Length: 240
Image 1 (cartoon, one colour):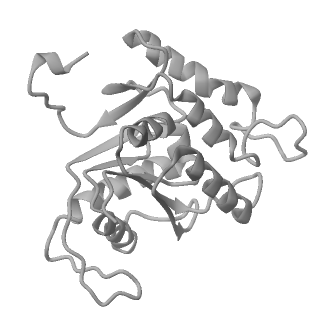
Image 2 (cartoon, rainbow, N blue to C red):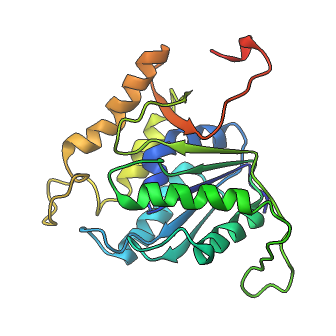
């Protein structure tokens, strides 16, 4: 299956929190979008990997993504090395996306910046024809494929975006997808330990951070992204 957009997250819920409304909007516009989680989030203070698996599936249905996979890398300990790069390359070649979304380049959680660089490096390597890859159980060698664009969504830190996407009308999809992770986020009835993301303030921030970015461009809600190279447009009129 060829996808238009492939979104990577170090943990289940990263994509939803960073780019959930953008993903929902692109799907509504007819694009095929997939999500690949690097780990099962097994080191998370709250819940279990099995619960996170179920929550990730529920969130994917809310957003309407075409496919979701988990590479089951080691939460907290995966590395940006050949072994892990090859696993990402296999996914890129499998789905041949035009655009890749990935973690914030710098963030509070060490896996976010590490995952960002891992995916970014793999996007480049995936285009090299002398790197041979096969999917497990498949005898066919994969064709080289390099995404045209790699964008990094914004997470815990308020990194200044290089561009923002107007997601007015799609913020509720994001909120619902995030809150599908009931074990992780605000629940006044939960007896689980409190974490930085389980507070009401954090859950409320999903909306008010998007509102603030939207305010800056004159719309209701927006999500921000950063890039590794200059953005190009055909005309001054392409900018809003």
